[in-house]
Amino acid sequence: MQDYLYYKNALKEVSKPCAFLDMDILNQNINDIAEYSNYKNIRIASKSIRSVAVLKKILGSSPIFQGIMCYTADEALYLLDNDFDDLLIAYPVWNSFHLTEICKRVKNDHIITLMIDSVEHIDRLEKIAKQEKGMFLVCIDIDLSSDFFGLHFGVHRSPIKSTERFMAIVNRVIDSSYLHLDGVMGYEAQIAGVTDNDPNQHVKSRIVQLLKRLSSNTLIQRRQNIIQALKTKGVSLRFINGGGTGSLHQTTHEEHITEVTVGSGFYSPRLFDYYQAFHRAPAAGFALEITRIPVPNIYTCYGGGYIASGAAGEDKLPQVYLPKGAALINNEGAGEVQTPIHYKGNIQLQHGDPIIMRHSKSGELCEHFNCLHLIQDGKIIGKYSTYRGDNQCFL
Ligand SMILES: Cc1ncc(COP(=O)(O)O)c(C=O)c1O
Image 1: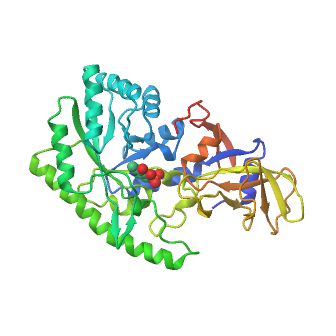
Image 2 (image 1 turned 90 degrees about the horizontal axis):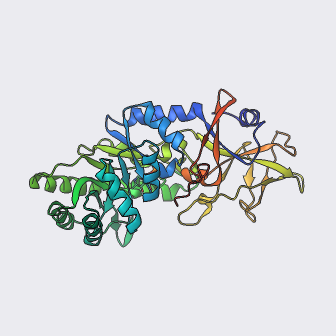
Image 3 (image 1 turned 60 degrees about the horizontal axis):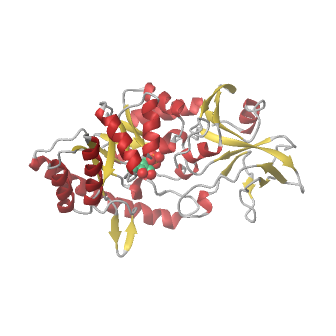
């Protein structure tokens, strides 16, 4: 793990605020994730990367990395124009302009797979495919959340909560002249996206660990039932997708899974610090510049208010990473234009010095910066454009 002076020196010529990618750590994270894959394919969650160059680097590093899990139709079309293929859009698309464009690309033999979970989605796609005299590749999203004593453990996404409902959708797709059933996806968000080892919340972490164990048993069984029903019907699929960074250790060991999605694990943002089964060093971060010292031990910097999405809470704030011991101030947090930092350590901070920060989530960092400055062996070796730097704003 590198210290404050390492990043201070590496970034000394870069104007701030700036985002950076520690390539030594990124390479390590890529290798570790490939090693953890248990020979399943890893599909890259682009929402957690948001840079064409980084996506290309990861895909090119090992044949284990296959395909992209995109987050919008526009993004999938953009990636197709940038020589990517095998694009799974993980969230349903309704917009007719986007669907028409995708239909045209599929006609030209590109692989863009759409997510569906209902008859309404099917009707919508059929209507557009009919108009375009084309067809769509579809993936069915199954719900894998759990309910314990009135507590919903998981996320609200797909209404497909039983094998019967799933098979009703499968039958409707199979009977359609406009749809081809390409895959099935189930995202166990309550395992992959919930921290279970927070040193500041021992009791809560123990409860989450227990809930995760209980929920894992039922979701694995639910996935098995669905696969069994597909087999009985004689349906074979190109892929069965599950998981995310926080469930890599267990989803890769499920027999029927053909691919696991990973995104956040590459940059390893703050939210992923507190998992029992996931320990990666942070590869991405950002640096702010101290521009004023209003009172001793308070260092006010330009920028910094990059708050993560999700249920609002302290864990969605950026983390002051280095120097060690520096922290945000409760009353002000991370500001729209200025962020005061409290620090009372051994390093003599001055005007112009950087404060090294981490975003709470992974790819959202890239929405605030045009590029990621690449650090290797203590030096800047180049930069990668972000989606924002490409003038692309998908969500
Ligand atoms: C459908 C789906 N799969 C996988 C993931 C996991 O992404 P990550 O590895 O960045 O946590 C997500 C994240 O929200 C998701 O929505």
